[in-house]
Image (cartoon, rainbow, N blue to C red; front, side, top):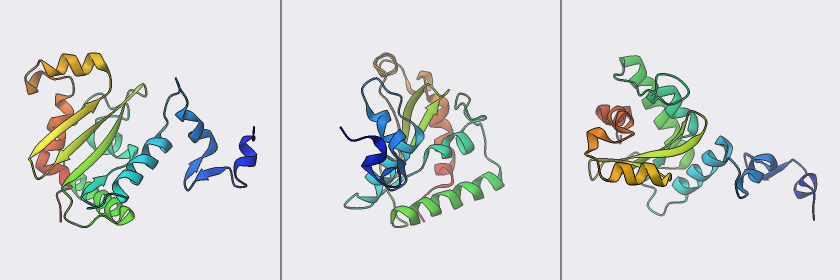
Length: 168
């Protein structure tokens, strides 16, 4: 079996993805932000219609929540916050080759450094979806009205004027 250093001379299996990060794909391993960012960028940049903008893992803790644990959603945005979000979205769109008319924005969220879930803002259907792989969260949320769902605060912050990331 090849050692990690034999896999590549640079210690990288895929551009911007270290061997150490790649190893987190094993059973029972915790996915790190490098892996999440890699796959978000891959999915969005290789989309046939290039209609989904994928934001990286730093976006949510920096712009959607009150702290970097992603537990308390922000209640409002200042004008400066909106400007920073717009710049972040334009940069991500350019990096992914996504045109200015995206239909969706995909946002990975790391809740308290213990669990990944994601938000998806769909501009065409005027809908915000939260994708959570924890079975108990899914089943519990399925039976509740929107305002009582676990991640309602996240949905609210995403809905603030498209969170500054409306298609250009």
